[in-house]
Image 1 (cartoon, rainbow, N blue to C red):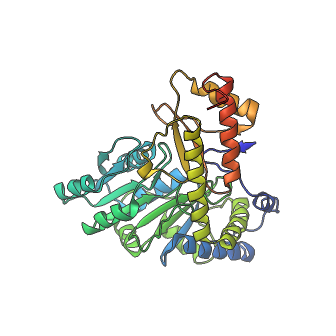
Image 2: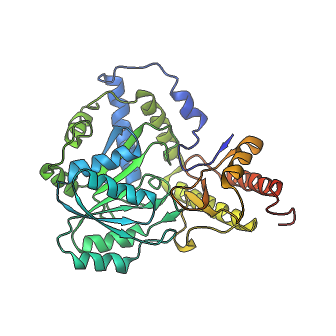
Image 3: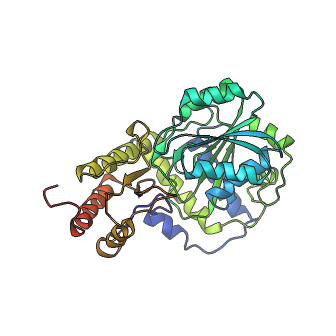
Length: 362
């Protein structure tokens, strides 16, 4: 089965094999060694000298944790939204009592620097900015380096959802001045769902010290104090730690520059492959993601039927749309090669031919 959705993503055989190990004492020495090893490796991929906390939960859990630990009720937040997950970040902040202004951009487009700058100029009382680096609902990667420079120019606190970008798309946390950077195990890290990662700058810890929103399970202070002992505050997803230790070793062997270059090649292969079938891309190619490609559903095509044919007849699983967009999506992050994408394009061609959408000569 060729699983090509934005997550969960396929796992290397060595990673799956690692999870067959027997459970161990999560307060014991062996787990502590695994925890410390993983944390050090994550910091290398985050390119940070700050802390990276490991939480048992999903990417959305890390978003909630970031909000609950760094903000207080009534804090003014500018949420940059150009897709489903930007809106989710805003929803979470509102749920916890922040005063959120949503700065929306056209779906399929990247956030515009001038518009963000104008919004920050218009309201000096804004304290924090949330942004999704890679918007998986639309296949767009925002220009985080430039956006971060604008946000830091106004001395604002910056929280970044990098759930589908960290480890796949360039994001040096410290160099770009990000305060909180979030990710999840089931994306580019090549392991099953179950762990969430939170990178924190010193400014983030200063915010944690002042924050007044309630938290218990997601408490960063508890996570940090336990991590220093090689432990977690609560029972961790032990098998996913086993898996992550192996996947991070594989990633270290490949090297981050090579991983980024591979995702760039694979992203291009997905986009060019779709266009070779006469399909059109949903995202403006200036902002095209190297981890997920959103493709406009051809006129008159039942996208659910198309995805069913791909699954049942060609062993290929693609993702449906998020929200009201008429798209389907190819995930290409983590354990993926150009050959994997070639197989997706071949299957897509055959499925579209069987539906009479394209001909053999397309």
